[in-house]
Amino acid sequence: MLSRAGGPRAEKDWRLKFLENKATKTNCYLKKYRLLSKADFDFMKADAQRSDFFSMRVYYKKGLSANGCTRIGISVSKRVGNAVKRNRIKRLIREFFRKSSQKMNGYDLLFSVSNKIMNYSAEKREQFLQRDFISFFNSFLRRIE
Image 1 (cartoon, helix red, strand yellow):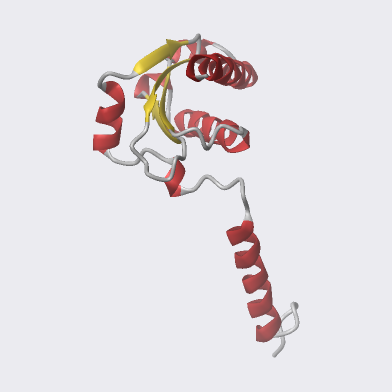
Image 2: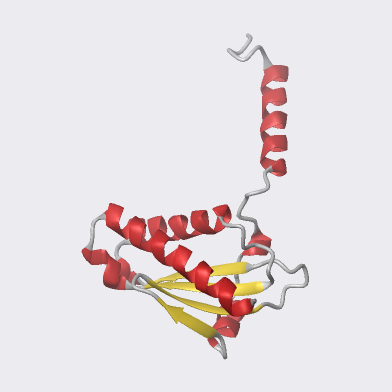
């Protein structure tokens, strides 16, 4: 029996195209752009410079990665809200970073989100996060140049 896509071969071809497209994306949020371990987070908290904004605090420091990529970590406290709200905030920050052009300056960044933004609607929270993200990168670029 043939499937709607034209049989097993057509389905396999579709999967290959999907994997090829996925592998060629240049704006992916790859593991090399992430702070993953507890040691990475501890490294960031020790002797890092920081910038405070309404919705977040950002720690930044020259990174240890050999490839010169900027890596980010995101910390969202349970006080910010339930898991759905915290994950939404993390997705927004990852998306802002993915779309930014600041991936190759060799710094490690740790975004720590404040619970002050939970007094506002979801739309306002997103606006605050985006505004503060842009403000951080504008001031960050002035400091490292």
